[in-house]
Length: 237
Ligand code: GDP
Image (cartoon, rainbow, N blue to C red):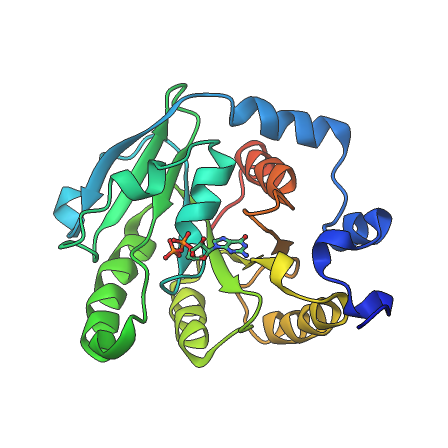
């Protein structure tokens, strides 16, 4: 039996320690996040090509990541909905970009197609890349891409490919480490160092990243606060 603190799972980490890792947000920032996400959110469009994207006018934050990374769970968590990210997904059309709009028109969440599914990979990555490339290049409403990385895997070669696409498009993006409840403290600390080292190599990657667990509700309020701050700081791509 492991009694060593570093062998404990993240859910039982010392609270202050965890808050430090999560990059503490002020009360005001947390409140801005809470307020923003208190608006109703609904699915407004699923686009398979540039011509069918909804008209711009509302700031957009995009979520990207490989299949099974926990993207739907995270979108559902921050919007406090159980099935928002899934209900819009038609199994036959996995290559679509899904748009969710806040009723108050302050924000749209953009759900990129999950990439890297089994053997369909090369062709589907090419298709994904073409659609996303165009979106990234021409979408002026896009404030930031959140690139979700499964904590247990860290940044994989497939994620590296995506980071290169984002670098080339000169779109500001930020890493979100998902499912941190699955890691031991020591593993999490090592992952943080590896991720920091990797981000430095990518010109468009934001130097700080987020730790989240949709399952345990870790880092959710902080992520909302971060997204709210992007809307007020007029971050440019
Ligand atoms: P998506 O394919 O990226 O949309 O991933 P999903 O949100 O559907 O999640 C994939 C799997 O990971 C599901 O079995 C989820 O229950 C699980 N999962 C998602 N988020 C978490 C998390 O924070 N912690 C843990 N332990 N499992 C999670």
